[in-house]
Image 1 (cartoon, helix red, strand yellow):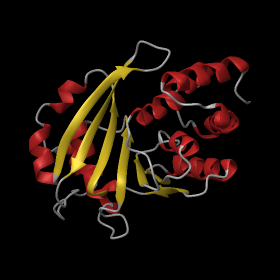
Image 2 (cartoon, one colour):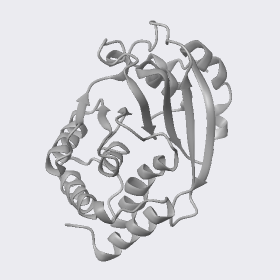
Image 3 (cartoon, helix red, strand yellow):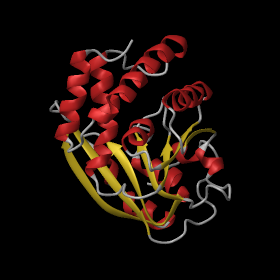
Image 4 (cartoon, one colour):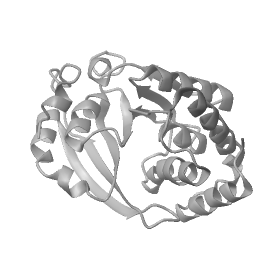
Length: 242
């Protein structure tokens, strides 16, 4: 089922609020919506099922990353814990020049992302199955990405340990968070120092067409992450650094 006229208008209005012209990408988002509905029927990929929820909280929420002037040029981007492809797929649709790797530890979600990449003809995008704690130690992934993005994956302290080892020096990691991000920032500085990271800033705003507050937390990479990080699978969650 493609996006309805109402859904298309909502997407365009939300894009306009973000300073984006989404008219050239309407068909791709409509196709992604159709794929997501079908995939969700087969494999329960996301709790969001209504058109309005998907447009607002998957498509537009993902595109809020483009509020930041961080995406110009042929960057290599890791979407850490992508789930059924967010924020990576919307980013790739609107910024096709990005080299996008979408990582998740759940096979059915990675299988869906592979299907969506093929159906949408997204060249320079690939899905990757595995645990971040293990893949971050592989030479082809260690400090190999100019940008790392993560959306609703884990607390900031855990995200920093999982994501910063993938991030190249002078790269930027962006964590998408809700309105209570201040609680997660408490104690983060010590963890960042251990991981070679720095807090670059926090941008807070409202999700387009709603009053829901969102935050983008920007982390930088000042020096290489010590090889002992990330720790073994499950350890960062059970015993966070802060």
